[in-house]
Amino acid sequence: MNKASDQQKSGAQIKEKTVQQSLLNGPPQVINLGLASFADELTKQGTVVVHVDWSPPARGDVELANLLSKLNE
Amino acid sequence: MMTTSEKVGSNIRKANAEAIRRILEAKPVLIDVVPASEAIPALQEGMILHAGPPIDWGNMCGPMRGAVTGIAVFEGWATDLAEAEQLAESGAFSLNPNHDFGAVGPMTGMTTLSQPVLVVENRASGNHAFCTINEGLGKVMRFGGNDASVLKRLGWLRDTLGPALGVALRAGKGIELKPLVARGLTMGDEMHQRNLGCSSLLLRTLAPDLARTVDDRTALAEMLSFIGSNDQFFLNLAMALGKAIMDPVCDIDCSSVVTAMTRNGTDFGIRVSGLGDEWFTAPVEMPEGLYFPGFSADDANPDMGDSTIVETIGLGGFAMAAAPAVAGFVGAGTPSIAADFTRTMGEITLTQNPEWTIPALDYQGVPTGIDIRLVVETGITPTINTGIAHRKPGIGQVGAGVVKAPLACFELALKALATRLGVR
Image 1 (cartoon, chains in turn green, red):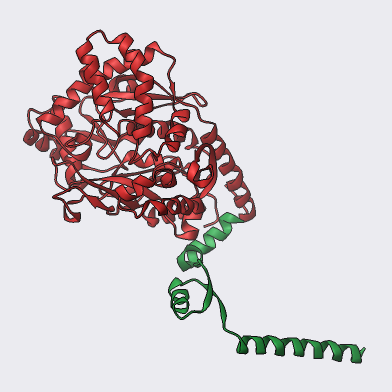
Image 2 (cartoon, one colour):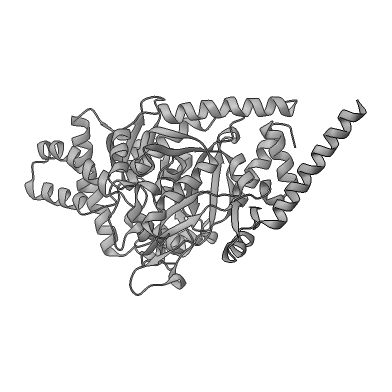
């Protein structure tokens, strides 16, 4: 039981290490949420960016967001 | 009154489904042209219906004041503009929104006793909606014009064209309007700032009955020329069509669908189905657009008119993809980005209208059923294509542009709906 668990843990560590190496060794690939200007700046520098046009519900107005939540349920 | 938010959401969805059903199943038909006094029996001497939510004389903008004084002279309530202004200041006229009387009017939206109005019958619901006849371009009362040439044209509409159109229409079975709009969308119209296709189709439909019923050939030629030379002739009919479609949607408990958007040059107002005839208003915004030679943004009046009823039913700015030429005309950008406006309006609407489709979007239907919840959630407000009036009375149109509905109207309505439904 302990041996299998150790093997699983070891496998996860290896995978995590591989991901870290991949992130550090290759060029960054970015998903940008919200402000488009961040994506624009990275694009100008040659970075691959997928921009997601997102803003908080009701522009961040807490009262309206809560009302929306109740009216949408 | 709801007791749980879960039930509120469910009831809103059901109510909105009913609102959409009524919108899509409407059958608007142009059946007549009659004096406004006949169409709207509540109209009295001294009563002036105007565009937008309620407003008193003191808060009216320049072109609206110009139109009020002009129409008072036209109706014989004052001998000249100066006397009309004195009477208006003294409160002699009863000023009321068109929307409260089943009517709509472009820009200043003047509707009074003797003016002829187009009568549109919604044969799915049995209600009627009214709008005056489009005056053409240039110096006209809807843009605040009020000189002798403006009043003379109104007199011709009252005494000649209006009665002739009424006789011609009564000789037929009425003109179904939804198929006309469907064809107009394929001909580059969006029914607010471009009505060339539908105006031409309407003239083609009306001309035979006019020819059969008007004996005076000179008068007939003048009528055909007037309609044929006015690319925006169909606008007023599109507005009455919109009003006829949306009025039966005005009383659905719990619905968050917008039933009217309108502006009086000072305030922008909306109505919401589940909130009946209550207005939710905010200061109207300035259009951004292009100006005729000799004019600039310094001359412009804030946005006005009941014509936003066409956006309320998914046309105008919502159907920009059908009318790429309009994007350039109103200064919204290049024709190639016209589709973006329509796609964005899809973010704040509940469905598409399968009868009104846009070729450039692979025959997607126009975005239909503005939901105040979606407007508030996304912060995206309705895009409106509009004409721009000079801010001073008596001058007229100076350009065309695009304006956004103010978000505050929708936020106020959302809070009111939440209060009505017991979750606030």
